[in-house]
Length: 479
Image (spheres, rainbow, N blue to C red):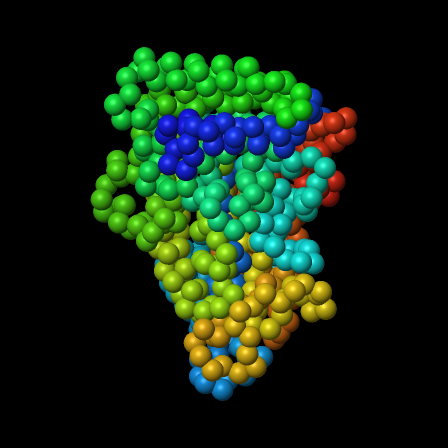
């Protein structure tokens, strides 16, 4: 974590040092990882920056980007007949249709590649943290070493675009006080790569401007003295049981990076108050919308990888175990305008061609099926009913892993392109051109100029950016 304690609303001084220690403990006692292999990708890099728009909690594809037969709510309607609870709408690309509530995104679909056949693993007992870990790292937990987040890989292998701007920025996810919090921390780190490649966490985008300034009223000399004390605390911490010399040095470099940012004019990019009110209002649908605006500003400033999340919190946001239709309607109102505006702004500024924007989620949802047909996963729906009796039962409540939708803009991807298909009737499994997590990550890495077979040596063995170097970029998606 490369953010000083006084300037974070999320952590105080003690928790700051604990967070640094936790990062080191993830690879306790390990020697410095070394670059083992960085074979060139099959294609030259088509993007310089990646923005991941993470729909945390399980965004239902049939309610968003893969509409099926629409069945409106009515008392007595059989649950098994319901696949989509929103009608399909036209988009800027004929014949691509998506679901009602996404009218703004529909108008920029001519800039998009839509993958409907993304398929994630059925991991048995379905936990959001496990599936998010798998998607973001390519590895299914538990693993013997802490797997780096894809943003950390980009920070390590590509370095910063702007030496002052953190190469890996995580917007919108609180790391304390919510369900599965420790597991969330586990995938939102640089793992064995070291703290300097970990995320600059901005839980509240509206506070980002304050997060890169010394505390109000603190003199420059006092600020410098505080920075010196924190460095000394790290240097004096014992090497051995909980940390290695490499990770200690990495934490120090992380502190240096934070101090450099706080002393630079580039920090203005974090301040949403600098944005014209008219533009700010177009994005301001809530925390996620403001996060999209911050992502655009940081892309302009030279960030390498930015994740903006709707945030996972049990039974809230996309985690629709009940009230699925009502909640999905609310979530679409939060994401629709900001995402479309982000694409238009990047395009207007000449940045979209070299910025890969990816919208994804850890799995989809279904009214009747948990996991995939035949799965032993425990049914976690809180709105079980054979027929519709009340509105909270209407919507997709169960975790479905057989197919998901992923939306990609810019960064060398085709425009107005539809890839893959799913069955029209339940179970809505991917029926054409399935794309697993290994290949999805390989596609992203390849666009950024990183080989899916790139590897670091850690504990005298290779660790690949895609599991066992098996990921293959989906070449049909590239323009």
